[in-house]
Structure formats: C-alpha cells, structure tokens
Image (tube, rainbow, N blue to C red; front, side, top):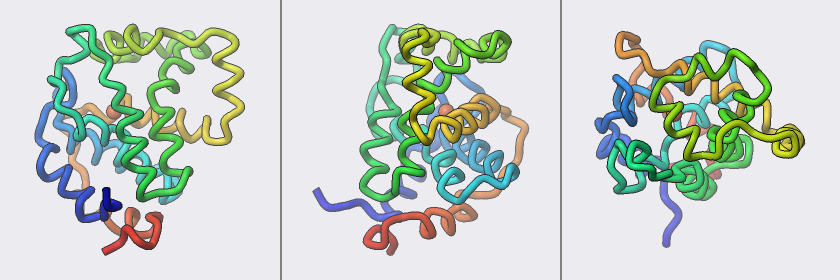
Length: 187
Ligand code: FE
C-alpha cells in the first residue's frame, strides 16, 4: 500500500470527523481540534500538538459503532491510529498516540483524584482497557521516554469534550503536520 499523504490524512477528518466522539457532546473533529488547541496553548512541541490532533485517528479508521464500548467492545483505536501515523510521522508523534489509552490507566493508578474527573464513557472504556495499572505496569510505563508526553496528551484528551469551546479550524494545524511529517508525506 502506498504511503498516505497529509492531504489523505486531512480527508479522513473531512469524511469521518462529523461522527460523534463516543458518547460525548462533541464530534471527532471538534475533539481533535480542542485537544490540539490545548496543546498549542501550553506551548507543546509541534510533534506533541500533532499527536494531540491525531490521537483518536483510529476512530476514523474503523467501522465499529460509536457506542462500541457500551457493547463491551474495545476498538483498540490507539493501535490503529498508531500504525497509520507511523507511516507519516516520527516517534515523538506516534508514541504519545499509542500510549494515550495506557496513560489513563497510569493516571488512575498514581493519582487518587484522577478517576473522579473521567467522563462516563471514559469510565466504561477504562474497564475494557484493563482498569488501573498494577505496580509492574507503572514502572514499565515510566521507562518509556515518551511517557510524560503521553500523560500531557491524556489530560488534553480528557478536557477536549466541551461543546461550547471555539477552536481554530483544521487548516490552522496543517503547518504543524507539514513541519513534523517525513518529507515524502508532504504534498
Ligand atoms: Fe480522545
């Protein structure tokens, strides 16, 4: 299969971005834009802004229903999104994407108050994803050089669910995509 281009990546948002973000009051596109805007506001690196924008790309790549978790199905979207993004971007983008789900399991284990901040759909998917990490999983997670980036991304992910928030359009973030993508992917 040919390597996708940035244009094809943006097309995925245009074609599938209007679907609801699993049980939340925002669409997939709104969720992605809010997460990327939060990253930009915190002066994150271009790579991490791109990771924030694309962290749920996997949801745009599968045909499972939006309420799959309510049916007991883990869509493993972090792995789908990771594999797609690996064709276009370096590890500083793809590792936080791959780790954004386990970062939730990590935060539930190390921060006593974190669980109570999760939305109901996030609590449902947590159960399917393995629940809070055990001691062994915590030390493994912390050994990954991108662990703290994944935790930052996770916090933006958890916040990016506000239907009243206004963000920049998708086109605003194209400059970051072009800046951090492997050369062959840029149009
Ligand atoms: Fe998300």
